[in-house]
Amino acid sequence: MKLLRNLFFIILAVLFIINCVSSKEYTGDIDKISGDDVILVGCIELKPPLEDHEQYLEAIGGEYYRNSLFFSLGDKILDYDDRNLSHINEFVKVILGQDFYIKQKYHKQLYISCQFIYMELSYPIIDMYLPGVFQIEVPEGCKVAYIGKIKYHRDIYSAITRIEIIDDYKNAKSELEKKYNKQVDMCRAKIKLIEENQ
Image (cartoon, one colour):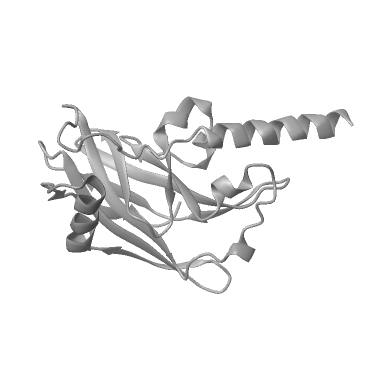
């Protein structure tokens, strides 16, 4: 009984930690981004997309996880063992297939790593891990940087078969300007897949 109670509290703690993960979506004035910040614009897509029945999210607060991707973004590469409170500020949540606008401290090189999707909130929690470490180089002085669309192709077993980086700059800029209701000077960041498997 004591073991079950401890497991329950561990699960609650994990859910609490991940619920603390912010989208870090920039909602301020696009012309007033502070000196050491940059807004990263991009999209991560799963092909074919998740269907509702693929995620078993009946736990309290489960809807928070539906069609959501979590990943580490920062100047260090993290792995799945780093999903803990000491690295909580380095994780972001985005909606699969939707453009994101993430505020991030500028570094010459940034990394996207440790990508995962919650598939089942039971014990044990079941994740879908997405492979790949991506290196991003943002031009110095750029305040709004487009990183592209990362597209993961999967087979019927949800194994990732191919990773594409697509330049959809024109549409992304149009959506950005619609969102913030003004013209925006958006540069292109360099992004490359530096490690295919984690």
